[in-house]
Image (cartoon, rainbow, N blue to C red):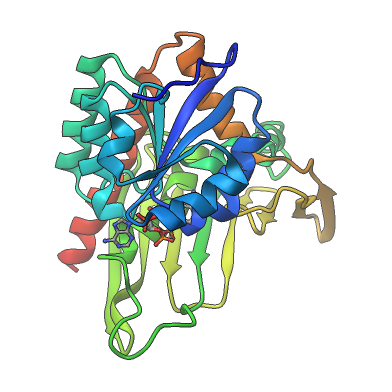
Length: 329
Ligand SMILES: NC(=O)c1ccc[n+]([C@@H]2O[C@H](COP(=O)([O-])OP(=O)(O)OC[C@H]3O[C@@H](n4cnc5c(N)ncnc54)[C@H](OP(=O)(O)O)[C@@H]3O)[C@@H](O)[C@H]2O)c1
């Protein structure tokens, strides 16, 4: 097939599908990441792929399968709808490509397990694109909490909600099968970031339906082995909300726009302690560019891929447990 030689120290990435998230955030961010180069973009419609390659570089390809045949692609970025993630990940791995897949990697735990096993057997990197984890603001919040900013943590809370899409109508907002794996993904992942592994699900509910479609919202209560709880809420017919808070023995803190933080935003950490409210400015950061770098570095430097697949499984197990708790409510 066609072939550009890899530029020194760069991972050559092919993109499967001209998704909104790829166009708005991920591909502009890859352009800024010196460790990656977009060498091909595939779409079901070649004109759409050409629109992307005019902006982001690489060759336009008609159809995802043909992109996987190319020898100028070392790895693929998969921003397809969630229900197609596992299918195209398996195909990409079978073609010998590393995979950076959008969240939620899988909508069923068994699918995540299957893909992780295959990636491990193939010696290829499989990573879920939880870009928010790679914004420095969260490490800074964790550092401040560990230093005792709010005393001992007693409760974590997080919400992610987005308004109805403008094209939503009574017949169907949800172009997604379920809001739970897709939209609840952020608060659930954030709970693990702050409370660690070993979270158990104490309860969960979903709103069964709305005029716009099934399961537009839900909430969950998780509990860490220490007994500290995480109260989580999510939805797709809500005023926009994307944040978390921690309530400690000596105060509390809150970070807004925590999951979809714009690159140029200086995050403000609101801290309330002893009746005084302060706002601590944190560094702006480029989490989409950072995660592309983490992915590329892991491959280019031959790092251990296991933590990335462990993270996929841990997240999928927790989502699965939340789904089962909500179904039995
Ligand atoms: N990490 C983040 O910050 C973030 C943010 C938003 C969304 N996401 C995730 O990214 C993924 C994509 O979300 P999105 O909102 O960007 O999706 P989207 O705009 O709907 O794009 C999905 C793309 O998949 C391709 N596709 C193939 N088969 C399709 C089908 N049957 N129906 C619809 N599209 C199909 C289409 O590309 P072609 O027509 O070009 O083939 C389409 O453009 C989701 O998993 C979502 O949760 C992540």
